[in-house]
Length: 318
Ligand SMILES: [Zn+2]
Ligand SMILES: [Zn+2]
Image (tube, rainbow, N blue to C red; front, top):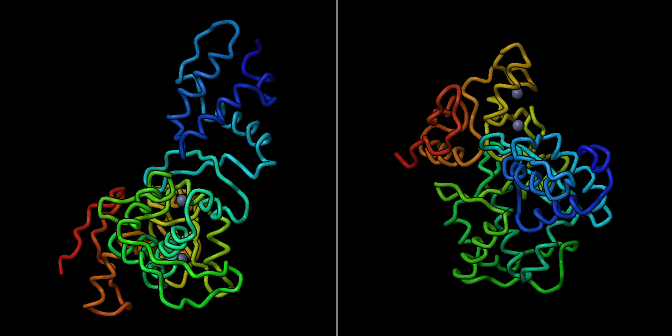
């Protein structure tokens, strides 16, 4: 009837169909959303006109999202979007926004499995996320080692559910890691590092900040340009500075400062900025048998300018 304007302001069957497409998968990219929205529009169009995916704009998708979000907010659900840390494509995900969103994993996994997943998250955001080295990922072999529950862990009175969690077998740990990938929480790199997916970062944002940040230590850091949580990219050469930039946000950030390649926070020269992400682990291994953390240990394969490959550095050459 009306030209996809006013008619879409009310939650209707087309929004229901749109929501349905999110329920069947963890995330949608803009390119994946286009044919879905086009098909819904076409089915709704009463004049039989053709609507092609190319007709669907980001604005169009965002209108669907606004109306759908208004309808689902009483259920603590929200469609959020973020930019991929790999290539800046826009990604949408239906997330549970209740503060204890991690507990939703408990509806499909046993407490021992959840405890193992929590140990993997601790490895990413605590063990492998230090002042000197922000890996924010866990190597698969290290993750499997976490199958064993630590003995006599001091019970956090708040988190304590009574019984202490039991170890998983190696097979169970392997299956759990695969399930986390299949369910859209973890992604695994070519070098076998597990990190959180964009969807997980959107969904667990509140929980991650609450769990890993405190007054002295902000372990969860945001990109200084796009403000999203950063788990791969670069950090200010001044290790005490909070400046962080995604590889793909760098150009935009520098352009905004008249092409001054300086830290957006402290304005120091960004040259030789240390990596954030699995590259920091490779670098870490090198610097442990060489000079210490001071000076200029940052000589990882770092090609200037466009560098969107995570796999261009050679590991373990020492
Ligand atoms: Zn960014
Ligand atoms: Zn800085």
